[in-house]
Amino acid sequence: MRTVKETVREAVPEAARPEPAPGAERYPALDFANSSLALPGGHFVDLLGTPDAASRWLVERGLAPADAGLREVCAAQLRSLREQIRALIASRVEGRPAPPSALAAVNEALTRAPAASLLHWDPARGLYRAASHPTTQVVDHALAVLAADAADLLTGPDAERLTACGSTPCTRFLLRHGRRHWCSTRCGDRARAARAYARRSRTEAD
Ligand SMILES: [Zn+2]
Image (cartoon, rainbow, N blue to C red; front, side, top):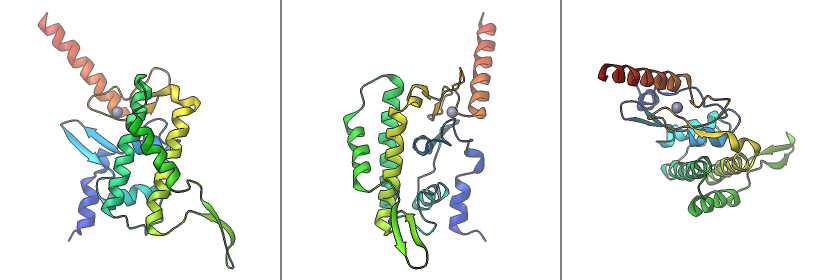
């Protein structure tokens, strides 16, 4: 018999998870911005949609301990920061002024908790670095790391290469390499197929 947990995992099917967009392996903030997927056929998959899914997303990226046990309020905070970071990336890509509310949200995340892992000492391990671990701070730390990474990305040399995936209905961002502006081979294939279809329809209409 399936547990509820397994059903939830399968509700975010592997097939719905495209490969990371170019740049997302280097910038967790870009991966974060892309964690809500718009799929063909009007389907949406939110990799931070439930506390379990959000925990898994953080654990897989080393941003939370395996037993983090996020609550819905934490998942909601993550989704909220994601939307603000997406708004900042979109404004950068489109050459518009940065939305003040998005700047405020990123700065709030940056200053509420240290993004750096702090230095600790105990008799068994000696000196070591680790994030502070009271449950409430796990999420604050993750938010701070993601906000700091977004600020680095948006002000660093790679900001020039930020672009939105050109394949409808995809809403992911990527770092452009040459002329490619698809986030994944699947989006590229779909865009090419759409172009071919449009060409065919035009020819038939003539
Ligand atoms: Zn795409």
